[in-house]
Image 1 (tube, rainbow, N blue to C red):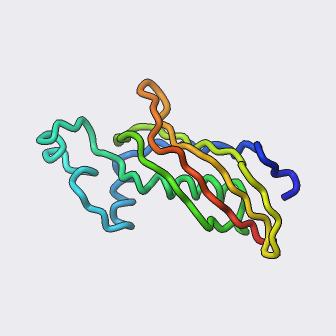
Image 2 (image 1 turned 180 degrees about the vertical axis):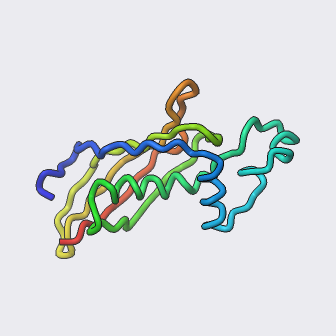
Image 3 (image 1 turned 180 degrees about the horizontal axis):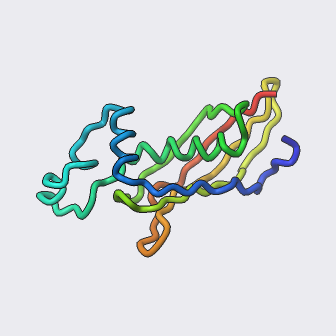
Amino acid sequence: MSEITVGTVVPALTKTIELTDMIAYAGSTWDWHKLHYDGEYLAQKKIPKPVVDGQIFGAYLVQQLQDWLGPKAFVTALDFRFKNLVFAGETIECTASVTAVEQTPDGTLITVASEVGVVGENARVAAGPCSATVLVRS
């Protein structure tokens, strides 16, 4: 963990969120709001496409950190704020950098600042500012 210092950039995680991903996520979280899948409901509300459940951004932020730090990493805190809607078929990118590193008796405690952005033609911030604290066990 000595190579991780304040300012270290975490490898980005990029995901295109398709309707099938959204339905699988809804099934695992029991969130069946029509906003996420029902074309007729969306048309009535004048919403162009199914809206991604914002909680999935937390799951992707955790995946980004665990992919980077490996199986000894345990996310102890996660905070994020929704900024904009994301629609089925859009691509998001999770970016992060290290803001603090602390050695503890249990391992290395790493704090990161991050953001989830929609990439492409309609680029915008989906969630941010975000932060996480990760314990990497010794």
